[in-house]
Image (tube, rainbow, N blue to C red; front, side, top):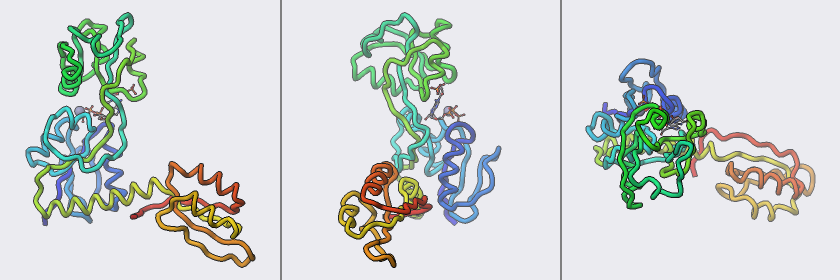
Length: 285
Ligand code: PRT
Ligand code: ZN
C-alpha cells in the first residue's frame, strides 16, 4: 500500500503538538520514542522522526513527502516547497537584539556590525532590502551569549517570551519575521500521495474548525428571534424548536470562539436563559 511519509521533529518544541494534531485526526500509532520510522495503524501514513532543520531537505530529496516545521526553518532553507497549512502553534518572532549601550534606531544602525544568528539567509534578505551591509556569524545554539564573549556586536534570534534575552542583558529592538508551525509538502507529488494528503488535510481542517467554534444552546423569548439571527453568524441559520411554554423558543447555534463573549453578552441582554455551551469535536462547513 502507498503511504504518505510525514517528517516530524523527533524531540523539541514542535514534536508533541505535531503528534497531537495527527492523533486528533483519529490516526493511531504507538510511540515516537527513539525510533526513526513508524507506520500508522489505521491510515496510510508513515512517520519519520528527525531534527527539524533537516525536514525541508528531506522533503526536497523525497525522503519524506510532507513535514511539520517552524516557518522560520522553512524560509531559511530557501527550498521551493509548498506550505499546505499554517498550523498556528509554536508562534515566535525572529528579532534583532542588542546589548546595553548599543544605540539602535533602525536597521541602518547595523551597518558594518557583526551579527550572530542561526538564520543568516532570512536576515541577509531583510538587510539587503534595507541596503545595510553587515557581517554574519552563523551560530547554531546559544546565540544570546555571543555579544558578551565578543563574538558578535548584536544578535538576531528567535524570541517568544523574551526571558532569554533579558537574562543575557539584551534588548529586543526589531522583529524581522513572525513564525509559526506549518505543514510543508513537496510541490510535485504522485496522485496517490496527493489523495492521501487531501484526506489528511480534510481531517486537520475539521478538527481546527471545531476547535475554533462552540455549540451554544439557550431559551429565548420568541419576540427576540430576529435580533439573535442578526448578531450571530452561525454555520447556517440557528436551529429553532418551540418550547412548551408559550412565547419561548429553544435556539441552537454555532459561534466562533473569538466572537463568543460578545455574543454571550448580547444574548443575555435579549433575555436568553439557560445558556449552555459545549465544545465541538469535529466540524465541516
Ligand atoms: O533538535 P532539533 O534541531 O530538532 O530542535 P531545535 O533545538 O532546533 O528546535 P526547537 O525545538 O528549540 O524549536 C523548534 C521550533 O520552535 C523553532 O524552529 C521555532 O519555529 C519554534 N519556536 C517557538 C522556538 C521558540 N518558540 C523559542 N522560543 N524556537 C526556539 N526558541 C528559543 C530561542 O531560540 C531562544 O533561545 O527559545 C529561546 C527564547 O525563548 P524566550 O521564551 O525566552 O523568548
Ligand atoms: Zn533544529
